[in-house]
Image (tube, rainbow, N blue to C red; front, side):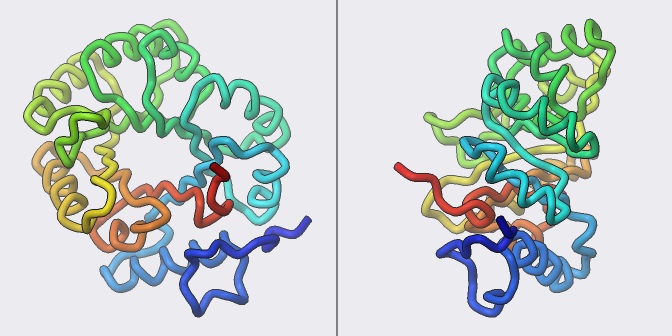
Length: 234
């Protein structure tokens, strides 16, 4: 099986001779150059949720080493064998995290992008103390103030960050998922301002549809799934 076994339908023209992974990297580099940045300063998190090891291995063979999962249980079932075979792979949790799964997440993941409430903060602090491992965190911000979406309210962000610092949690930055169907740039810009206001350098923002915009607006981590693996069925 070759890494270039498919071409996502939403891949722009001009990259047809590249594998999906090489095309995404080239697009990141291009967007970074426009913004006066370096592409290597942007971490590509390949979102492998629902994908079997057989779909992940070609990306590993092509050099991808950072992957993202939405659910702790799925990651526990799938990743230990992959990490044993490829110990330089890093695993990021990008989905909502239940407090009772905090210890499992701390043991398995190398970064957690979904800290969004005081109860989860407390659970993560206890888990990190118990396990003896400090896992970098992003605070997920409900940047569009959507009732149905997870994330810390903008108004609650200062208090949550103060609590995190008091607990000696390694908050690396902020994460967001902008509202669907609306231009993402203003939300990315707002997340960047919030991060700067609170002395944070990490910005986890941008997915398959808008990662280039996110890179131009300062993203340090982009979370790309369908543009790498193809769209999920159903």
